[in-house]
Image (tube, rainbow, N blue to C red):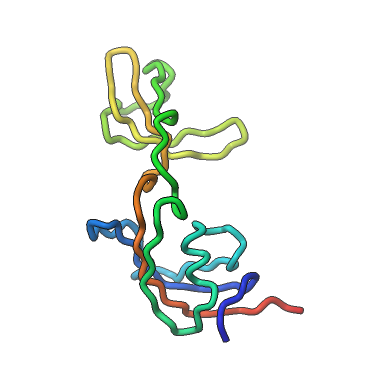
Length: 145
């Protein structure tokens, strides 16, 4: 029985960058559960799982275009320091959580700090990176007909 679009799957995985650095893993955690083909995970990961069988393990390299895309320079913005509502002194490398008008929370990274402004990067932290996954299908649940 192999994974088809619409199936609920549970997978264990380890994600690494091209330099070998692990950026995410289910090791020591519950497997990732999602509906195959429903765009709940990045496209390359979703596509890789379709066709796999229970217990199958494989390595897959996902080009940045099928992951988080290229870094977008338009997503680097300066905002007035006074606009920040934090009790911590902003520093380059610090990650803040911004909330949109509709309540969505977005992590942003501070790249520069001046006396009056901070520069934030709204790009996804993995934008511009190829992603390498070791994936193992643990469970496949076919939808009820």
